[in-house]
Image (tube, rainbow, N blue to C red; front, side, top):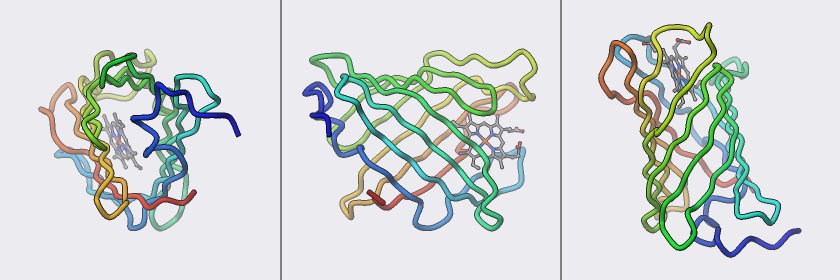
Length: 162
Ligand code: HEM
């Protein structure tokens, strides 16, 4: 095992594997509400960078659905955090925000997509990760698209799976 880079100590609570305990809830004004399961994994190799993978599955059929992977960096000496993200839908994004205690609040700073991505296109993404007092991790995602103002898309709670 490689020692954690000191710069990442404020994010140590995120490291490891997390699994949704109950299905997460997906919604948006233009879609049918849905339920999904998701596994998150956050790891490091000693660099001041966290590597992550998020894999979502259909709650009933277990069919693979949305997937994201990327990197997390912190601006040295600050509580500023950046997520560098690639999604299987053809979207890439940079999200930045602040870490306060065990809560991360992020806003997309840049969003780009493949030339043939489905419409409507996402214009803006906000997400919050929060370690709850009961030790569970919670993620909430809102987004704005070409034709809808910022609205919640996802809410899910994870248990530590080590
Ligand atoms: C629909 C974006 C994560 C499942 C959508 C739509 C967009 C979108 C733009 C189309 C909305 C519309 O038609 O008005 C995103 C972004 C995500 C994300 C930016 C991450 C930041 C997820 C995750 C799941 C998911 C984790 C879990 C399975 C769905 C489903 C639909 C949908 C089932 C409706 C059917 C469809 O359009 O494919 N999402 N999504 N999404 N999303 Fe997400």
